[in-house]
Length: 217
Ligand code: ADP
Ligand code: ADP
Image (cartoon, rainbow, N blue to C red; front, side):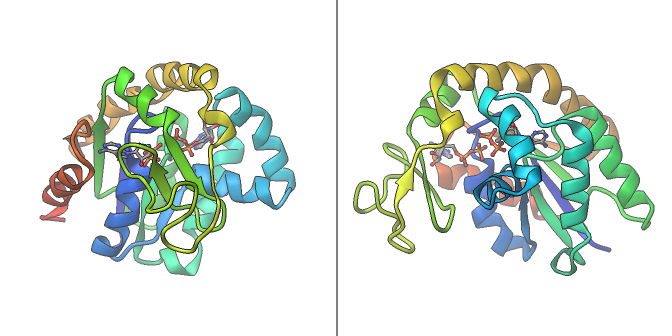
């Protein structure tokens, strides 16, 4: 039975950071909706240009477009054994569409990890977030600094700050999270697959708690 693990949590709660570690632990591909949108944007595809207008404002990209993009990714061969989902689903409609698509193949969500971090901490994390332009590795100027400022440890790529990580947009993204995404916590809790994780700890401690929550998969 394929394994589907969802990392649920507000912007900058550490989903991407933890997914980069857990994908090897679980042996599953990391499927991040935000990364898929940014990839399309970089290559100027129609999907990327459509998504940009929403991303720039910190709003969610419409469900139909997002659902089609992620389900398409999950249908690829490397996802035959399941996936580690990061940033999707983010609305009830997305969660229902995912459940429905999996059920068609007799599959279901294995576990949802609900990473909890207070809003003021999230704002601090976002403001120091830096990303490698070539490989997408994530750093933080204080909490996970690269060895040389502005340069990726892994491939020497240039580190940049995401356009939507500016303070005005972040406040909007947080309110979008509380309005549109946080209802998923109850949705998955009722399915009995949700585990709460304290995301307000050092990166290694969060990883340890996540691994414990995945131990009996
Ligand atoms: P973060 O984890 O910091 O919130 P992401 O990289 O996951 O950022 O998402 C960046 C932006 O991409 C979001 O603000 C939104 O515009 C868009 N996006 C990503 N995932 C989804 C989704 N599941 N539904 C709608 N929009 C999404
Ligand atoms: P998300 O994918 O949920 O938006 P990221 O993994 O990109 O979040 O993390 C947001 C920022 O916070 C990054 O700069 C990252 O280096 C940093 N970060 C992630 N986890 C922690 C942690 N446990 N403590 C401090 N900083 C963290």
